[in-house]
Image (cartoon, rainbow, N blue to C red; front, side, top):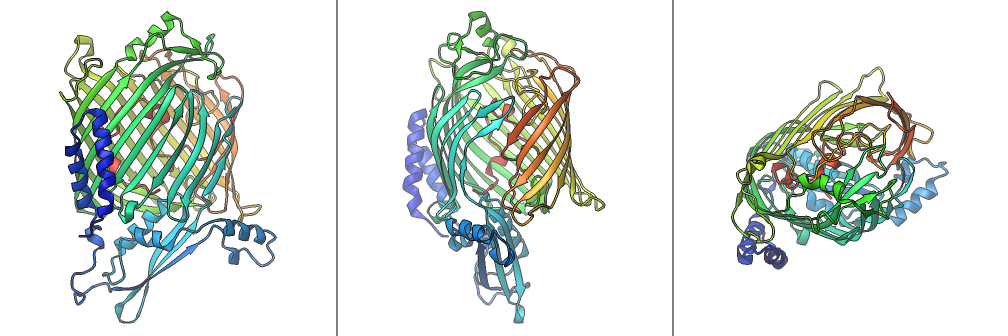
Length: 625
């Protein structure tokens, strides 16, 4: 076993600091973190060398590993007469390549190991999961005597980004400035300073993230700064399952944030939004293990979590926003503030969580799904996860009530690839079975449900076309904490403003034809068109300011741009027209990434902001940098 003692003081200090804040005995958490680090510091068993060099390797032995890490542009393929060769050379000179040492540490095999095609495939997928690596291929070349030479071929993305945050969403909006280096000094370190503001959110802060902490497979990230109504701080120390071969995983996280929950007041009122200040604080320590073989893995996990949700000075702290001017809110009249009372339930709860999962998946590498030419590893098969968390009478507070409940979180995924097409489904459920309180507060509370069906349709007759379709349904029932959905916005019915038609339940449908043009300069950037139609409706469901809408629709078109050529990123310029009445005219939007599809995932921003717990088997999956 390889043991990295340098990580222990850091883990001990982190565990102790958060334990003291929540009143948890520090030695217990420290011992847990140290023991987990000891166990997790060993490399995956599947990647270990044979104990006896004379042991037979039925598929041959790896005798050499060659790493070829390319910069952003391949100047040799640009053509001797290409007028932009000088720009390519300049960009490559300004960029620091991902270090060979970093790439080598991500590999699940070593020189002298028995050759295993699974470990090569998993190594390539892990490398491609990092956002700063555009392409990664890991393959073997046969040699005399059954030996194998392994070639690791990678190409970087441009990693230094200065985002001005200008968008058009119902009018010109300045969404702040962010300077980010995603691969500092080629070591995979993320460093960012930012001013982000969009509607109620205004964050000024910095973030840094370290993959491969102290040479282990531990990841560490932290961020801190100011919000519109206070401050935020978060920290995550994790050892995820290493690809599909990892056996153990660890998570320790902390988050505290002063924020504003934004309720849309809908259209036709004197005010556009209502802001509810709250303090959201969470802490978690979890460990998990997997049994079985890749393609048939069973997960068992255990953890302890602590959550606090406070609403200071309610109802006097509630504010109104007029015409979307979040910088100048005014105090809300008492009758308006009291409409939120049903979703203002302060809590301070400790839970013991058990996790079960069954993962029967494989991956298929496909090109041009959400990107124009960039490829992505798409998960197929089935993946189920269940979390059950029982509240315990520990660390109770005299000022904030503690819940007596049983929390349940269930996730189910299925993916199929009939021919050149894809069918992906997702089903999710979160809820609490409450055992205390008056009759109206017992039973199932804070129930959030969602269902998504994504399809990608392709045909050989039209190879440059990808038809994307989705059907999504989501909603909240018996909510004691802030919750609201709206119909419009960037990932809703795009011909309507985001605040249009608030409600507690929502159905959305989209059909979009994504066309790759392949000109005018396909070796410089990717260019494509999109033609789309959206439809959806909301139901009141008793949420504040909710109203049931009729079916509303959108038709639109736009441009899709990827730079440099072959990138997995997409910038969209869309013009959407409402149909069926109720809209305010065409809406022009600019978005810096593709929000609909596998690249963004199934999670919706409006559901994410209302979930108090996100602990489950999916929390331990490796996602790269």
